[in-house]
Length: 233
Image (cartoon, rainbow, N blue to C red; front, top):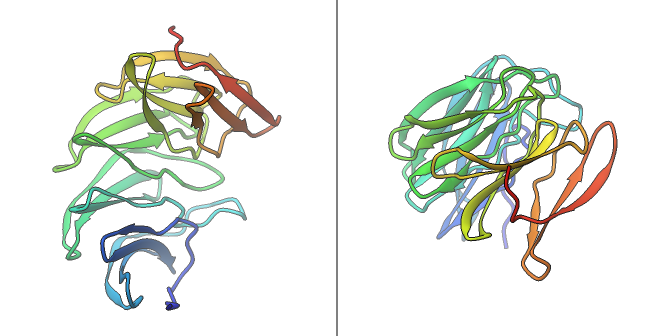
């Protein structure tokens, strides 16, 4: 139907809501959010979220790898600015509503922390080579609602998934030398499994048929692991 040229380089997936397509790219040192018309591919607007020197990254990564998220009113994006994570949100007309820096982020392989929406929160994975964390921000103001530390201080690039399982709301995240489940309402941890490897890139997958989570990783060893989600501690 149409083909639109997008400047710069970015590995993030485009997202679609109604008649709008949102995607991100790194155009030189600018990290840019684009909005296109779904029917024609015509650019509706573009906004530079942050301009910063390009961080060190893996050759297979990009400087715009985090997929945006939207609730139909606002669109949320995440980038790296030096050694700080930047999370920002825009309305569908391209007006910035807020921009915050919820924590440090250092990784020799670059950045990829795609935001996830849950109730009044936008949740972002902050696993990095330092004081790792997972953080929930207010969707309306960007204020930090909770921030849970992660013990092992190791980078990961996974997006948490949220499901109603085992009679409770669980947010599952692989990374930081572990697989863990949290309550996305307050960041409290339900359970944790050490390992089975050091680094993770792919998000977990849940199969309702088997009532199992499936994990893949990573480095230095490759694993496929099936996990029952009803544990504790």
